Length: 157
Image (cartoon, rainbow, N blue to C red; front, side, top):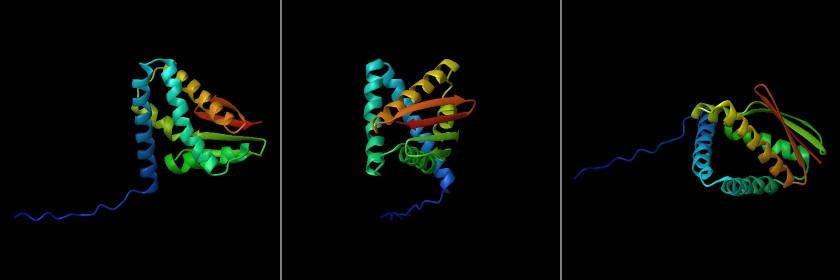
Protein backbone atom coordinates (compact mmCIF):
# COMPACT_ATOMS: atom_id res chain seq x y z
CA UNK A 1 0.00 0.00 0.00
CA UNK A 2 1.28 3.43 -0.96
CA UNK A 3 1.11 6.29 1.48
CA UNK A 4 0.36 9.69 0.00
CA UNK A 5 1.93 12.60 1.76
CA UNK A 6 0.01 15.84 1.54
CA UNK A 7 2.00 19.03 1.70
CA UNK A 8 0.10 22.24 2.32
CA UNK A 9 1.10 25.06 -0.01
CA UNK A 10 1.45 28.43 1.65
CA UNK A 11 1.47 31.78 -0.14
CA UNK A 12 5.01 33.08 -0.51
CA UNK A 13 4.77 35.71 -3.22
CA UNK A 14 5.39 39.33 -2.29
CA UNK A 15 2.49 41.74 -2.88
CA UNK A 16 4.09 43.08 -6.08
CA UNK A 17 4.14 39.56 -7.62
CA UNK A 18 0.52 38.93 -6.56
CA UNK A 19 -0.53 42.26 -8.13
CA UNK A 20 1.37 41.57 -11.35
CA UNK A 21 -0.22 38.14 -11.72
CA UNK A 22 -3.68 39.45 -10.79
CA UNK A 23 -3.39 42.09 -13.52
CA UNK A 24 -2.14 39.50 -16.02
CA UNK A 25 -4.97 37.07 -15.22
CA UNK A 26 -7.66 39.78 -15.32
CA UNK A 27 -6.25 41.10 -18.61
CA UNK A 28 -6.14 37.62 -20.14
CA UNK A 29 -9.77 37.00 -19.16
CA UNK A 30 -10.80 40.39 -20.53
CA UNK A 31 -9.00 39.78 -23.83
CA UNK A 32 -10.46 36.28 -24.17
CA UNK A 33 -13.97 37.51 -23.45
CA UNK A 34 -13.64 40.34 -25.96
CA UNK A 35 -12.36 38.00 -28.67
CA UNK A 36 -15.34 35.69 -28.25
CA UNK A 37 -18.03 38.31 -27.62
CA UNK A 38 -16.87 40.60 -30.45
CA UNK A 39 -17.84 37.86 -32.90
CA UNK A 40 -21.44 38.30 -31.72
CA UNK A 41 -21.47 41.98 -32.61
CA UNK A 42 -21.59 45.36 -30.90
CA UNK A 43 -24.85 44.73 -28.96
CA UNK A 44 -23.27 41.68 -27.29
CA UNK A 45 -20.17 43.71 -26.34
CA UNK A 46 -22.34 46.43 -24.79
CA UNK A 47 -24.33 43.83 -22.87
CA UNK A 48 -21.11 42.24 -21.56
CA UNK A 49 -19.70 45.63 -20.52
CA UNK A 50 -22.91 46.56 -18.69
CA UNK A 51 -23.03 43.21 -16.87
CA UNK A 52 -19.36 43.45 -15.86
CA UNK A 53 -19.74 47.08 -14.73
CA UNK A 54 -22.55 46.17 -12.33
CA UNK A 55 -20.14 44.16 -10.17
CA UNK A 56 -17.83 47.18 -9.82
CA UNK A 57 -20.78 49.51 -9.17
CA UNK A 58 -22.09 47.18 -6.46
CA UNK A 59 -18.64 47.09 -4.83
CA UNK A 60 -18.30 50.89 -4.91
CA UNK A 61 -21.84 51.50 -3.65
CA UNK A 62 -21.14 48.99 -0.89
CA UNK A 63 -18.29 51.26 0.18
CA UNK A 64 -20.77 54.14 0.43
CA UNK A 65 -19.38 56.15 -2.51
CA UNK A 66 -21.53 59.26 -2.99
CA UNK A 67 -19.41 61.98 -4.62
CA UNK A 68 -16.61 62.60 -7.13
CA UNK A 69 -13.74 62.44 -4.63
CA UNK A 70 -15.04 59.25 -3.02
CA UNK A 71 -15.41 57.64 -6.44
CA UNK A 72 -11.92 58.65 -7.56
CA UNK A 73 -10.41 57.53 -4.26
CA UNK A 74 -12.17 54.16 -4.14
CA UNK A 75 -11.44 53.37 -7.81
CA UNK A 76 -7.76 54.34 -7.41
CA UNK A 77 -7.36 52.35 -4.18
CA UNK A 78 -8.95 49.29 -5.77
CA UNK A 79 -6.63 49.33 -8.79
CA UNK A 80 -3.51 50.24 -6.81
CA UNK A 81 -4.07 47.49 -4.25
CA UNK A 82 -5.38 44.79 -6.56
CA UNK A 83 -3.21 45.29 -9.65
CA UNK A 84 -0.39 47.60 -8.57
CA UNK A 85 -1.37 50.55 -10.76
CA UNK A 86 0.32 53.82 -9.88
CA UNK A 87 -2.38 56.46 -9.48
CA UNK A 88 -2.66 59.90 -7.90
CA UNK A 89 -5.92 61.59 -6.95
CA UNK A 90 -6.78 65.26 -6.56
CA UNK A 91 -9.95 67.27 -6.16
CA UNK A 92 -12.96 67.62 -3.96
CA UNK A 93 -16.51 66.31 -3.60
CA UNK A 94 -17.68 68.07 -6.78
CA UNK A 95 -14.78 67.30 -9.13
CA UNK A 96 -11.95 64.81 -8.66
CA UNK A 97 -9.29 63.43 -10.97
CA UNK A 98 -7.42 60.18 -10.81
CA UNK A 99 -4.23 60.19 -12.87
CA UNK A 100 -2.53 56.98 -13.89
CA UNK A 101 1.23 57.25 -14.17
CA UNK A 102 1.14 53.49 -14.75
CA UNK A 103 -1.95 51.36 -15.39
CA UNK A 104 -1.18 47.74 -14.53
CA UNK A 105 -4.13 46.39 -16.55
CA UNK A 106 -3.12 48.35 -19.65
CA UNK A 107 0.48 47.18 -19.27
CA UNK A 108 -0.68 43.56 -18.94
CA UNK A 109 -2.98 43.87 -21.96
CA UNK A 110 -0.15 45.27 -24.06
CA UNK A 111 2.15 42.39 -23.01
CA UNK A 112 -0.48 39.75 -23.82
CA UNK A 113 -1.60 41.12 -27.17
CA UNK A 114 -0.16 42.53 -30.34
CA UNK A 115 -2.60 45.38 -30.78
CA UNK A 116 -2.33 47.66 -33.76
CA UNK A 117 -2.44 51.42 -33.13
CA UNK A 118 -6.07 51.33 -34.32
CA UNK A 119 -6.91 48.58 -31.82
CA UNK A 120 -5.18 50.54 -29.04
CA UNK A 121 -7.27 53.58 -29.97
CA UNK A 122 -10.45 51.48 -29.93
CA UNK A 123 -9.48 50.08 -26.50
CA UNK A 124 -8.93 53.64 -25.26
CA UNK A 125 -12.34 54.65 -26.57
CA UNK A 126 -13.87 51.64 -24.82
CA UNK A 127 -12.16 52.69 -21.56
CA UNK A 128 -13.58 56.19 -21.94
CA UNK A 129 -17.09 54.82 -22.43
CA UNK A 130 -16.61 52.50 -19.46
CA UNK A 131 -15.59 55.41 -17.21
CA UNK A 132 -18.50 57.55 -18.43
CA UNK A 133 -20.95 54.74 -17.79
CA UNK A 134 -19.45 54.09 -14.34
CA UNK A 135 -19.66 57.78 -13.42
CA UNK A 136 -23.29 57.99 -14.52
CA UNK A 137 -24.15 55.28 -11.97
CA UNK A 138 -23.17 57.85 -9.31
CA UNK A 139 -24.85 60.86 -10.94
CA UNK A 140 -21.53 62.11 -12.30
CA UNK A 141 -19.84 62.71 -15.65
CA UNK A 142 -16.40 61.42 -16.59
CA UNK A 143 -13.83 62.97 -18.86
CA UNK A 144 -10.84 60.85 -19.92
CA UNK A 145 -7.65 62.43 -21.24
CA UNK A 146 -4.76 60.42 -22.64
CA UNK A 147 -1.38 62.11 -22.76
CA UNK A 148 1.60 59.96 -23.70
CA UNK A 149 1.72 57.06 -21.26
CA UNK A 150 -0.46 58.91 -18.74
CA UNK A 151 -4.24 58.89 -18.44
CA UNK A 152 -6.41 61.17 -16.34
CA UNK A 153 -10.04 60.51 -15.47
CA UNK A 154 -12.04 63.41 -14.03
CA UNK A 155 -15.34 62.74 -12.31
CA UNK A 156 -17.61 65.76 -11.87
CA UNK A 157 -21.25 66.81 -11.49
